Each structure stands twice: as C-alpha cells, then as structure tokens.
Length: 328
Image 1 (cartoon, rainbow, N blue to C red):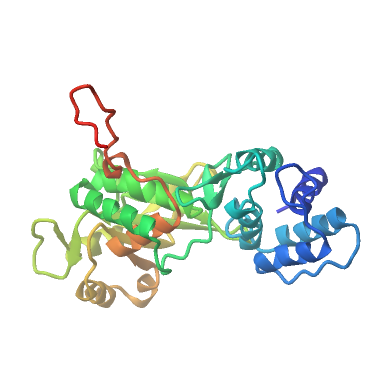
Image 2: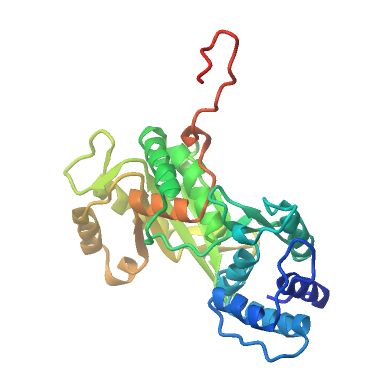
C-alpha cells in the first residue's frame, strides 16, 4: 500500500500525541507503542513525527492480506491508537479521537469504527470490506458465541437461496473474492452445476476462478436423499458439470474454466461423503475440490465481524407504554 506523504505525517502526529484527544508520547513511549503493536521498532532520538512516519511507510510496504486490505501490522497500529483506556479528559468515549483519526483515514479510502466489543475496526470505503485479523480457529468471546448461536438458529430455518444470498455472498466478498455472481434457482438451465461463481486475485495479479455448489442441510453418503439431507452422489454430477463448463468473464470478455469448486453445506459434511467423492474423482479434479460445512461458515462469519442477517437479529426492544408494568 502507498499512502500520500501528508496523510502519513498526519497519522504520525496522532501517534506522537501532537493532536488533541490523543496521549502525548515521548521517545520511550513511542517505542512502547510499537511494542504494543508487536513491532520491534526502537526510536533513535530523531524528530518524533518524521521517524514515526517512516516506520508507518515501512509497515504499509509489508504484504497485504488481500488487494483491498492493509497489512496486519497496520490494523494493529490503528487498534492501539484507539484503545479505550487511553481516553482523554472531555473525550471519555473517544468519539473526538475517532473523528480526528477518520479525517486522515478517509483521505486514503478507509474509515475506523468501534465494534460491539469496543474494539477498533477498519473498513475499506469503496468495497465496504472490513479489515480484520480473522482466525476462525481461535477461541470466541462470549459476545461472539451469542452471535454464533443466533446464526445457528438462522441456518436451521433459512432456505437454500437465503443461505447463498444472506450468508455466502457477504462472507466471500469479505474474504476478498470479487465478481461474485449467483446463478440462483429460478433459471436452472444457467447453473451448470454451480450456484455461484467468483474469482480471486493473487498478489501476483494472477486470477483464480471458483464455483460454489451449496446445499442447505447435511451432506452424507447415504443411498438416497432424505429430509434436510443431500446425497453426495448428486454433488458428484454437479461438481463434474461445474469443472467442465466454461463461464463468461465480462471483465476479460472471454470464456474461462472454473479452477476450483467449493462444496458448501449448511449442515455437516460427513467424512464418508468426503471420502466417497474423493474416490470417484480423478487425481487432478480431486485437488480442485474444497469443502465448507456449517462449522466453517459459522466461524468465518463470526470472526470476520459481518453483520447478522435480519432473521438472526435479536428482537427489538419495545418501549414501555402506560399499560405495562414498569420494573423498579
């Protein structure tokens, strides 16, 4: 990432505390600040803002999470700048500090905000993508566990189209995929074994194409499909069609083949189903198939801090009326 020099200097002034509503940091405290960001930068006694601006430029030169996401170290810097326990007098909720920081960030296409847990987050304005250090295997906080329970209930009740539209499309957009196109279920003739196709741009600017075959319920290796359960034999035909049929990329104005196939289930994908499908595909196609089951969807959706679908939100609190018993 490359920032304008004036924005680097403005952010450096904020870190140094040369701006109202931010704590003043002398040389040793600047070093301590970068230690809190897991960076081994030690201030050398030179002009503080100039030295910090150079370190920020070094951080922004690190590998990005995705083309539209900053390096992890930069996100840690933003979170450390906005920690709640450094609130200054007259700005106890840090709203003034947040506004001052956003005056700088918006010049580069970003905006900072506090999530429900009071942790600073960073959103890319053009793509509405939230930059986060997403590890779906980390322990979840109590608030995240509550959101996960609501999302589980939503998965139990939603339709296959709602699974795609309300969960999978926002999730894959957040993960950096683009040109996400849903075939839908109204026109089956245009699916060719896939519900969604999308592409992902590597840091080398090479493009990989993906197709998604989504099923609402459990995916197993039983002899026939049952209620809320899909047979993996159906998936075999759909995956074969997906990998063998070309898609039209309007950005390149040509037809391309799908490189990888995601098999996504709103329920469990049993080990027997995975093994059976792997045995039926040849070695080359086997490497092209990836699985995502309910637990993968839930964890990724929660740790990427995406808003819950409307059907999973808690009921709105109703205001008291004269007929209600007001608790004391």
